[in-house]
Image 1 (cartoon, rainbow, N blue to C red):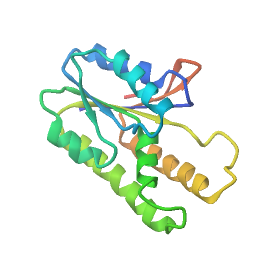
Image 2 (cartoon, rainbow, N blue to C red):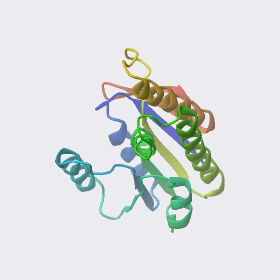
Image 3 (cartoon, rainbow, N blue to C red):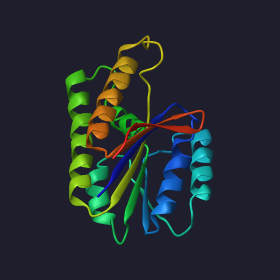
Amino acid sequence: MKSILIIGGARSGKSRLAQELALESGGDILFVATAEAGDEEMKQRIEKHRKARPSAWVTLEATTQIGSQITKNIGTAKTVIIDCITLLLNNIFQQFDEAADENLIEEAVLTEIKELIDCQNHVAADFIIVSNELGLGIVPADRVSRLYRDLLGRANQMLAERADEVYMLLAGIPVPIKKA
């Protein structure tokens, strides 16, 4: 089954492209939402995203362990959208305090991504995965932010290696990075 990774900056059109590609597939769609509503603004953003999705889509709200949750909840879906890896990693980081050993955080992130890739290899569905590209900016000032940026970069590399196609969104325009 096909895997597409869509990366880009904030508000670059990643989610919109993922939804357009899923609609083109013509089959049942499982939308995996990784966001947690930690404050009122995030609650409003989540609600706006919910309203933008077709009502026929099944939504799975999964903050971690998404590979196993997709496997359990795939149903009749022929396409899975994961939106997004950036928030998935944030959820993993939230499980640790700021003094946590970097190796433990790294292990948790890499395990999560390996389980997602394993899920892709065993579930009979196409995957469209959304993630941010954070490596183009300045080096973050603090240790935790640098670790987050570095681990998201590793996760994106792992997902890109598995993907059949990779697109980077720039100002709403998809730029092919890897074509099937």
